[in-house]
Length: 228
Image: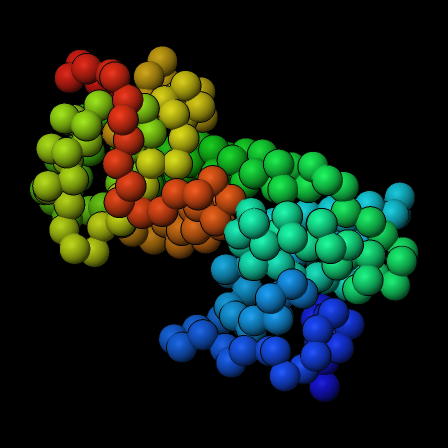
């Protein structure tokens, strides 16, 4: 029986197109209304029909109403918009705007920056080459975040210190990261293991699906060795 927060598989595709849940999935699962793939909802984004007949992204998953889940991938969401999938699953009660993928990117970036700010306030984050280097050497890093426009030299030095359990991400340029951390410049950022790191992991993976990036991607910026 379909739960109140899942879409009827027959609404868009035949049931035979639904794929098995991903191996190793440990959280609640939902069915993507576009691909019909069943997966951990942490790899998806929830949408609801707004009162004005629009489709509203629900990154926190707490907005009222029936949820429609889409894989956290820009191309897949764009396909949903192009094929009017949201209109079909809401029986004509709501329509997705063509700018929905861009809006999701903006919301994910805002969420990521807010979470980084909270991680700093709670002492779960350090920034600056020296502090990040010390945290890596002490084995106190879950994520190494680098500005996408940081120099390859500085990033390479820290990457070589990262153990096999440390993920390296370059989601945003320095000018976006710095204000969230209360700094003039922000190139190297380390997040300690813990609950905040897990929340950041979710946002980073969703953002990667829309920004076409992933862990361990290198940047090609021009900043020098005086990065902080």
